[in-house]
Amino acid sequence: MKFDLADLRAFLAVADLGSFRAASDALHLSQSALSRRADKLEAALGVQLFTRTTRRVELTTIGRGFVPRARNVLNELESALVGIQDVAERLSGQVTVACVPSAVAYFLPEVIRDYHAKYPRIRIRIIDESSSQVLTAVARGEADFGLTYIGTNDAEIEFRPLLEEPFVVAVSRGHALARRKSLKWADLADHPYITLAQGSGNRFLIDQALALSGDRPRHFCEVQHVPALVSMVEAGLGIGVVPRLAMPANGHGTLVSVPLTNPSVTRKIGLIHPRGKALNPVAKLFYDLLAEQVESRSRG
Image (cartoon, rainbow, N blue to C red; front, side):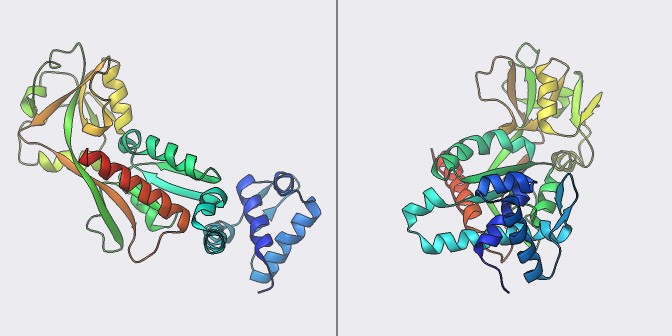
C-alpha cells in the first residue's frame, strides 16, 4: 500500500474537524495538498473514506470504521519511537469511555482531570448511556471500554469489578423519612414514589430483588436515568431508590441517602472491554488510571 503516516494524519484531521478547510489550517497545509493526501489514502486502500459536497464533508461507513484503526497505528508508532517521559508530552488521539449516567459523577471527574494534566493532547469522549447501550457500544467498538454493572456473564466481554454498592432511598432533607437510620421497602408505601423505567438495568436489579416481596411501592412518576430521578427528589416531588454513588456526598444541602433493607439491593460496578482484545495505548492509560484511583479510594 502506497501511503504514509502524513496521509493518516491528514485523514484523522479531516475526520475530527469535519472540514478540509479547518484540517488544512490545523496541519498548515493548503486545501489542495490536503485533498491530495486524502485521495492518495483512498486510492491505496481501494475504498471511499469521505463523501464530499460543495458545503460539507462526511465520513462514509467504512471511513468511520477506519478512524480508530488509524489512531491505533499513529499512537503505537509514537509509543515505540519516543521515551516513556516523551510519550506523556507527545501522545495524541482520543479515548472513548462508555459509562452509565449514575456512575459518571463518582468515577470520572477526578480521573479526567488527572489524565488531561498528564496527556493534554489526548481528547476524551464520554458516552453516558444506559447499561445496555454501554455494553453495546463496547461490543461494537464504538467505545474503547465501558464502566457499568452488566456484562459479567457475557462470554465476549471481560469484566473487571471495582466495587459493590448498595441502593439507598433518596429523600429531600426536610422529608419525614430523612432522619431515619434505615428504611424497609414497606416504609415507602405511604409516600409519593418515583421509579426508574422498565428496561433500565437498575430497575431490573430492583425488580429482581422484589420478585418475591409484597412491599413494592406504587409509583406516580417514572424516568429513564438515575440523575433525573435524583433531580426530581431534590425538587421535592417525592422519594426514590437509587444506587448510593449517584447521590451527593454527606452534608448536601437538600438531599439525604437513607440505607434500605428487607430486601437490600446491590450492584457491582466494573470495567468492561472485549475479551481477548488489547486496549490501544491511550485507552489503556485511562483504563489503568481509573482502576488505580477507584481501588486506592476503596482502600482509603
